[in-house]
Structures are given as C-alpha cells and as structure tokens.
Image (cartoon, rainbow, N blue to C red; front, side, top):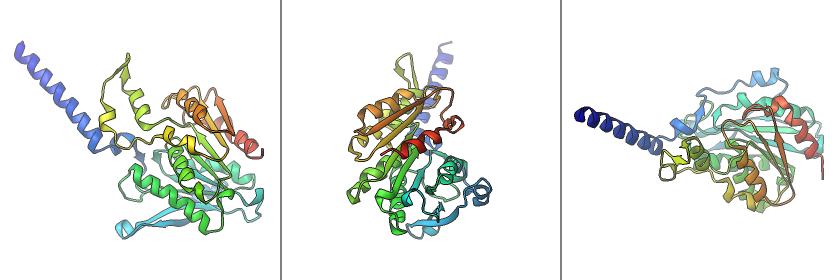
Length: 284
C-alpha cells in the first residue's frame, strides 16, 4: 500500500511540475488559440465589408516579414473622415471578427482590422512584445495613409483591449485619439488566469511565478487622455465582469460604462452593442 501511495504521489507531483513548466515555457498552449490559416476577404465582402488586404508592417526576412490586415476606406468620407481601428482577441483570425465592424462601416466609418503575427497563417511566435509592436505599427500605418490620431477610434475586444490601451498610451504624444472602446476587458491576463485556477480561495497553480506576459491593463488605463467606453456583460464566462468595472473606476474622465445582460463573452454583437457604440461616438 505504501509503495502504491508513493507511486501515485510521485506521478501527481511529476504531472504538476510538468504542467507548471509547460505554462512557463509554452504559454501559447494556454493563452492563445489562433487559426493557422488566413481570413478570406471574400467572406467579408459578401458580409457587407468591402475590404482590401494590405501589408501594414514589414519586420524583416522571417516568414517574408509581412504583417497583413483588412482595410475598408469609406470613400464618401462621412463622419468627418474617421476610421475604426479594431484590435481582436486571443483566438481565430480577422475573419472571425469582421462582422463587428460592418454596422460601423455602414454608418460611414472607415475600418482597419490588423492581423497579429502568429494569427491567420502569419507564422510567428506570439507574445506580448510582438502584439504590442503590431498594435503600434497599425496606428503608424493609419498615420501614413492619412489618418491623424484625432481621426482614429481604437476599438479593442478581450485581449485586444490591452493592445488598444497600449497603442493609445504609446501614441498619444502625437495627439489624442478620437475615442477608445474596450469590449469585455480584463484587469490583467494574470488576474484572469488566476481566477480560473482558484478554488475555495486557493490558487492551485503559482501563475504569478509562471506567467511572464501579464497584459496589465490596470497599469495603462490611468494614462489615457481621450474619452473611453467600457462594455461588459454580467454573463461573461471567461472574464469576471468585475474586472471591467474595476478598469472603469480607474479610467480618467470622460468615460462611459455599458453593462449588458444575456450575452456571453463573445456575443455582445447579438445584443446590438454596435448601436450603443454609434450613439456614444456621436456625442461630443
């Protein structure tokens, strides 16, 4: 019996150590779920967003070094030549998210949805550093093609709320952005991950020692110098809605909080949150 107990204990300890090591060395297994194939722009066109695929960043020879995205330009220049920069979450590719921008384009806004390195068949390691760089280069690209910061609405969803905040804080020295929208945001990746491994108040995995890419939104939110819209749902199964409310409390004014009921983490669109976005954007 004692031998059996020792074997079982040894197996459990080894499995736990392997789990911890894999979280530290291979975070992409746990925190990112990208499609390894590109989005089909024809799908977006059929869905009402007449995008063109563009290269917005060239970082070198690796995998041709070209980072692509989807661009829709409103040639009528309604809404004072404004563009929505949509930064997506930790999974899929741009095709999975484009529908969220269709009503915004229909209202007269241009739209840019950059793909991240490591997503949509753009083979590359995924990390906080590279996502930050891609977000910065997305803004730089829009500046190059004629959009000043004051013309840009930065809209981030889920993990994209971090890249949105990072892009806004790092680029606002060149002028304030028109607006910042944070849909289902989190305080930090570490806090969210710990929420999912905490039972009866006990953290079962020492993630504070293992997670190196923390995506800390609380460290950025207080630095924003533009109006902020925070959107969350009480029924979010991935990110506790209290995290969005915490970010809202930390955000400087002017700010607005929209809390929905009856939607999951990915389905605020079903409740037509874009209508609230459009109404909010039209306010001075």
